Amino acid sequence: MSKNIIVTGGSGMAGKWVVKDLLDHGHRVMNVDRVPSLNSAARTVITDLTDAGQVFNALHMTTVRHEFSPSIKPEPIDAIIHFAAIPRIMTHPDNEVFRINVMSTYNILDAASKFGIKKVIIASSETTYGIVFADNYRDPEYFPLDENYPVDPMDSYAMSKVVNEATAKAFHA
Image 1: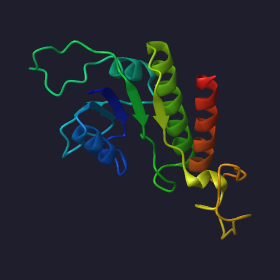
Image 2 (image 1 turned 120 degrees about the vertical axis):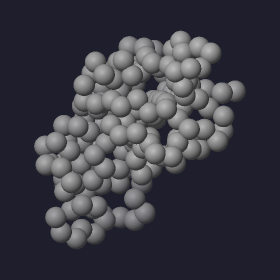
Image 3 (image 1 turned 90 degrees about the vertical axis):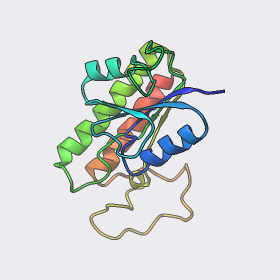
Image 4 (image 1 turned 45 degrees about the horizontal axis):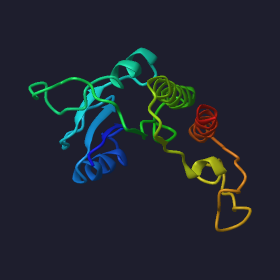
């Protein structure tokens, strides 16, 4: 059965593959991103996810591809896959990486909660363990890493992902 799915960051490195796979499986997908996807059958809604008003409006738009479709009435959203983020350090000032990543996740989860969208998938990162992007080489405390491995972020990106995990747990509760 076809689902209405929103992918944030669907124009990005990982998001474009998720959008393609969902479309290949017959789902109706809307990409919510700050840049359009160049090679996608999904419509992109240009949205600043740090702006709660834009997020609320984007999540209540139709997922149909074209404005000339037989109906452009918004239908209920079945799921959101949230990939949108500044994807790494050293491309933006540290405070902007943290602010954008944290506020966009909060706004997506807040709007999803208020619209009754029960399925939201957020992307975290291996950087939360403090090994990737560390100031210096760090050996893992043990290997292989698992879900019980201690979180020890070393940069603004990893800190934003730790905050996003806590935010998701709070909304889930």
